[in-house]
Image (cartoon, rainbow, N blue to C red; front, side, top):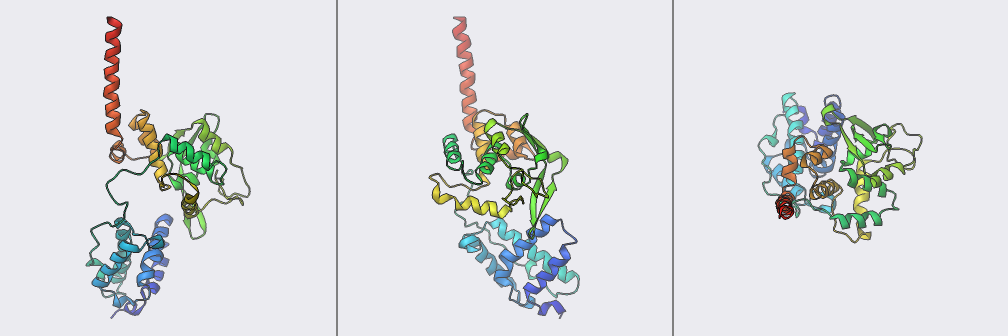
Length: 322
């Protein structure tokens, strides 16, 4: 029997993670780290590797699906699949190196049904314009109120917002360039520039530009980003998500996720008649087809409005001729 078979899975995966630091992009390594420490080790860390079996892994996947998230909430099926992928790769590397005699993850099957209450084919939850105005009024004086306002005004992703640098902003136009995202490796932030084809310029409305202009240029700041903590350091992505969730008891509004602010931005633009190509470019989607699939629920209403507008044009023309 190979030596690693007698190790606990926790010990084996920690050794494996050390090796992956030199083989993976930092953001990928961090993602593997959180999958292992957040999902795999709490359920399997004390087990010896030789004790891992197909039935055991399949039970753990069900446990993760039904209550493996924060506060015992169900996990998304794709999250469980990602945890399985990390475990599969780690064990496969051990078999390949001759450390492990078997990889039961090869034969373990994932759950097929997503049990989350919000895991449906329904469109994303969004606010209308009135709810957006109410939210911005309620959070105007909050420490992160301007960050929420820029998220709503640009549709930027969380990591893009926190990586926004002063060098990316032109308040005279006003506009900004989305050119980087932020990831955290342990307690160290890392700004990773986007590929050239994904770098995009966003024009800003007056309210959104004002939210950026109000940010103090704090020092010291090794990463000259716009949104910083009081000591000048960048915000951690998880801290921002936690702060978003904690504000809800004081808000009389339909509860949505931080990521849903992108959907709010896009849906309001589409409803106002903005070209779907422009919306797609603002969101940084790879293709217009992706945008159309995501916002298919908005398009029928737009099509009806287009038909009414065309009819009105003909009616007006007929009236002028008569």
